[in-house]
Image 1 (cartoon, rainbow, N blue to C red):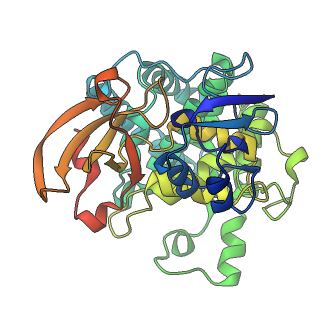
Image 2 (cartoon, rainbow, N blue to C red):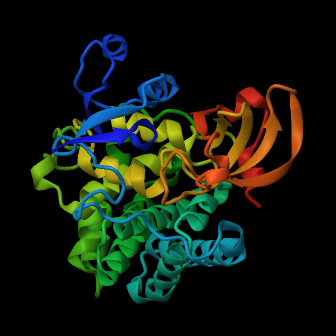
Length: 387
Ligand SMILES: [Fe+2]
């Protein structure tokens, strides 16, 4: 369906039918195209055109535009209010999965039911505020890396599944799958698992075997559902058949498996470690989008972007008012109008006492997110402003 929308309603994943201006159309070479790049979106937003036409059959509709569009998660508790609870849940979850993974290493039988209460609490935290726990999970110390990755993939899968309106029982299984998906790594020799540099071809082959080893462990564990097995089995598959272990193609990978490929890659790209800080969430989303549809299910990637926002919580952004701000909350009003914490005045080259701005409010209609900014370029640590 062709639909006329205001340009500020545009978002990645929409299919541009017409830009309504010959000049703008020339700027894009093609007049009809899928809006995939943040730079293209910015170019349109910065132009003087007011309205564009989108084709909602070929791309995303406006938020809340059609019945099949899943609603954005509703924020019940503000980010900062959820912080203390989310921190506690993250640390407890890390400790629980650490104990469980050590059992695997020791060759002991694991008790999956030990995960049930903590995954329920992770889901509750995400339903209160979808982004607090997820952004806390990005930061990891060297010794907690694998455990935090498990908790993070668990939280991201629940957030993603909630956005897709999956029922609570499925969210629970998705979460347990996230916790256990790399369980096979505990059976990979230490010198390969913890090798600081690049792996040799032979070492990579052994590392990749973590999927098979994980499935073997889970097959011997009572109470593991088929959904948990899917997440574990398929999180390294790719839609074009280039993944492992089975080189499955898009149609052969389950929904939770396809979701897990996106979430696992996103988490690996964005995690902040002691020696290597990952790339910014907004950039990771763009890379994953560019790797679709060959690598990832493009429709699901679009939903994932909606679920966590084009500028996820913790991103450093430049506002139209030429100030730097850190994204604090997503807003139902639009992915480009989050709640931000303003920290820097670029024009005056001045650090500001941080204050919050809800860009969805009418009084801030003249301002908005212009672009993602590289924190290193400004010598700023956005995560420091989140607490
Ligand atoms: Fe893995």
